[in-house]
Length: 182
Ligand code: A8S
Image: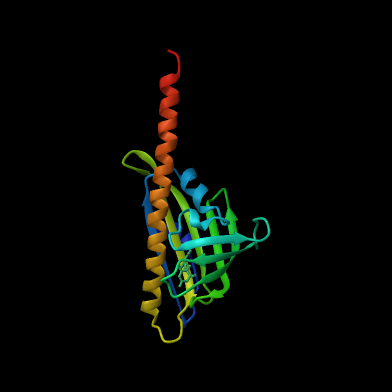
């Protein structure tokens, strides 16, 4: 399944001076809850731990641009990112980095969210893939390692946020059930 999703949605065509990879994360929360966090192009700070602030100038549609500020301690301060693809049916979000003060040139990424059953409960498989130029002075391996590490952190945090939301929804539903007259 994983391989099929990757072939379908995550096929990048890296050139010689570029690198490309994909990260997979299994989350114990229903697809709709995970997607509700992922689709908020205007609020990446809701789950991305390195983002301190984000501003979207126009209202959010394909072609919208966000100005992201990242926390200190990283080799970057800002990033200007464009929404390239948003599919609420198939749960696909694509972004492209178009500027900013950092070393990731020509970065673009695709994130997809797929339903899956985990321990008999509705869960989600999230796949995020990217392509980026290898910065001067770095190797392909170093670049991939760095970006994979950032994405791993983002998806771990997405899991924590989504699983917490799922638990809240479930608790609320349970309470409503208990209140229902026999
Ligand atoms: C994302 C993915 C990445 C973000 C990277 C790879 C970045 O926000 C950070 C450090 C950098 O050096 C580059 O979807 C940049 O957020 C955390 C500022 C772009």
